[in-house]
Length: 480
Ligand SMILES: *Cc1c(COP(=O)(O)O)cnc(C)c1O
Image (cartoon, rainbow, N blue to C red):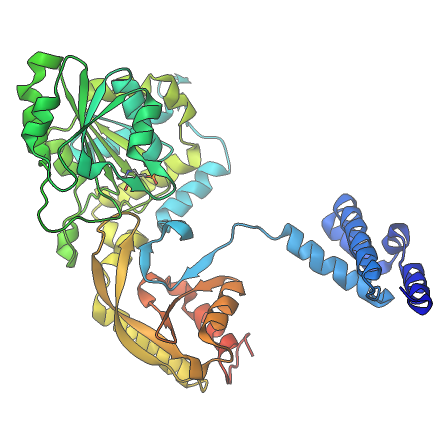
């Protein structure tokens, strides 16, 4: 390094204020009042250290006036929640990466009411003594599904794990080869089975398995036949799996060899409403599985049920009791906020209001005309601001490991790259960086926005965000 460079560097170092000096600045005093002295001091140390690093690399130190602003920017960033809302314009209704099911208004209110105070979570107000957290959703779940008993745990993965651990440990569980699936997030049925202490017995072939394959696998160690929903993939062509009634019958016919053989059904998503009424294929219904004679049915709270993350187990009383008393149930238990939201969600079904109350079902049952009206409304609002867009026909998907390959017709707002300041990839990235983030689809050099998954109250922000990345926008609102 030359002498003159060394000299500038030295004078740059001298221009660096000490943390104490910075703390005496009036603007910094205001930030101390807002953010607290420890966080401000720590952040100042970090900023001064960063400035030293910059000088060492031959850069200039921040000017004296800029410190307060640097500090405030950093503090705003530090205290901002990392978990933030997103506008989902992808058209994937149960988007696992985007938090799955948005909750109903009632569920939100219930969380609010219960979380801010004490509750009867484990208290029986009639008896004035300890109660069970598992009693709250139980009545609703048995009434809705026809099951004898019900238990709620943390998620469906833990529900399956608890069922296998409590009911099949040290014994054999028979599963069709076509159902040994991996679900997102590394949940692999063979691995879960092994972890539970049960032994997997694979029967049939990848594409075809018959009731006799199950019957032939039975021996004195057989604990259960298990059916697993294929979740996020679909087999087509020369395929066959035994129906649930077939499995129940086969289990009953073979009980002499093994003692009672349980039938366990991992529905994954599961649904209480008939998806075929909405132009979709048939997603297995929880009530059907119970009626067919399953001993244990497991399904998610935040897939097609449209509630909070939870794993719901319904079935025969003896099985549910055994699971409720298993030590793992304590480790996998749900908290009061989940129970509050779940109860409110189930109430919507009980009251026959699921289609209007529960966002997942509202989105799923929206008519194409309704979506077209919204897409056209967006198109017109953008046109009024000098942004050209078009409305395309397209498809929304369900997601969440339910109804793989199925889609619903929709209308999409399409923005071509000619309307955007930047190429589509960069525009999509800019939309992700706005607050709240806006996530859309990219296709054929266009940004595509599906109104189906955008909540009513998010429409205006969505338009402002689009305006922010558009080439020309004469916006009167916040985005201008
Ligand atoms: C999604 C799914 C699970 C896991 O459910 P989580 O609620 O995400 O834990 C388990 N089994 C099947 C078949 C699934 O589709």
